[in-house]
Image (cartoon, rainbow, N blue to C red; front, side, top):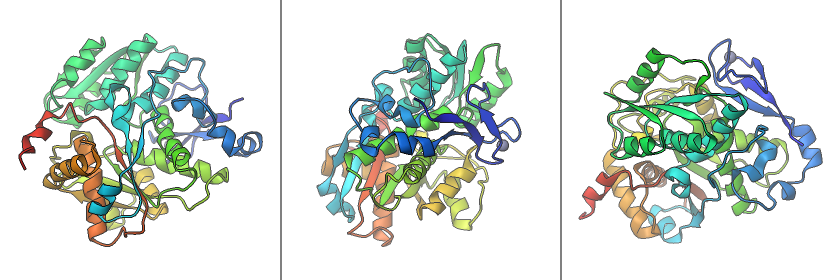
Length: 390
Ligand SMILES: [Zn+2]
């Protein structure tokens, strides 16, 4: 039995049927969000059954759209590692690192792409097309290969070494575009879509968010209902933040939370902080950040198609948005390596840098439980080793 009902636009609330090929709202181009019949789900399935046996993201299929074929490369089931030494260094209470580096293709993008590619297979797609800072492209290339779906990937020239070659190894058609992510998106738009081709860039299709919700479900399962006070997530386009927000709203409506929903923190780089600026000014949408510069390419994203949803997520949960310097990102990578045994991606290091800044300001206290997410594997960012003598 499936409880998926269709999609609703996050901006204008227009409803879109479950089997629709629309990737974004036909009225306002806003992000489509999946809707479930939580009333029936809550009567038919217990919390224990939802978190029951099984592995990977598809064990949570009651809160995922229904697909005839669930594409998988073994995504999900990533470790929730308690890090007491790092907690003492950072000055917070119980601290866990959700290590998404252990996903297929080395990042949390795998979760979303498993669901997005499954949807495209059902739609009879011939090819998926994406503009990406790197990790989403890798995930698409791999999941597309597994599903027999062609992929065309627009990647900015500033992407870390090896990403283009690896995407090509999976058989993807890779176009390297001079500049940064918006330049790659511009080139993708200029080329247009052929017959049977679907764009699945961030918030241009609805299922990447759904797949990523399973991060929250795994955290809840691993902590046995003892939800953390804070979840700290490095934020570019915002699918991660929206995923956590949506997952916790669904769990709350089902009555499956024992504690208050976690406060969600979006960490950005000082060189590219559109959400931090909008959050601080009280705005309900984001102005594009000019000339984004940061070593953390995964969060070098100057705007978002789901800016309103991200800002709501931060405000409704009592969270915040915080910017950290590249220097703090590099320093935090070594702090995490030496106090937790995990050398993170620059984005994962940014999450720790955000935590340290929030404990220093007293926003997060020594009694507060925290989860930080290391979103990706560090090995594609060899420059992170340049500071190893520090
Ligand atoms: Zn709309």
